[in-house]
Length: 151
Image 1 (cartoon, rainbow, N blue to C red):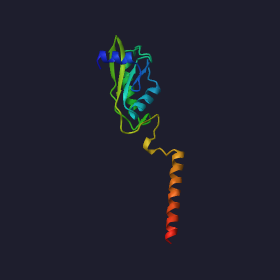
Image 2: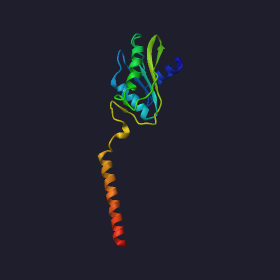
Image 3: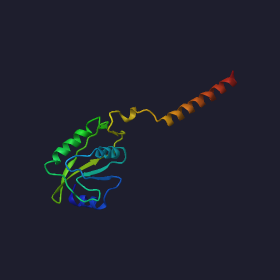
Image 4: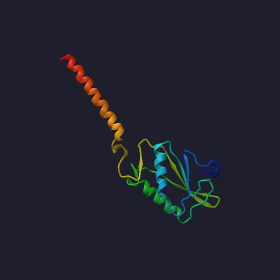
């Protein structure tokens, strides 16, 4: 990412596809929720080392490579994001400070953060299950009535 593009992103601020995270020496758990959210929607970009207002606080230079390794390790862990995902965070120097940029492409598989259970394996919500059961029961009764007329 070039400096001019980053400058524009910082000036525009957070959007539905751009999220700023302060970060510091550690990655907050809500960062992985944001990754999951972007995967399930239209994709997006996360910038670590940036305040919510777009000002760059930076990440300590000695901490940045370890944070990148941690991000990769966490998104590869099915207990954090399931199914797992491949990301390639990059360290960017901006005005003498380090920012970690994570570009997230939209994924066709639903992801769930902080869970070891795959999204597809989750039970249906009770209200939906009740409606399906009610509709099936109603249809069976309609068919029974139809066959009763034939007999």
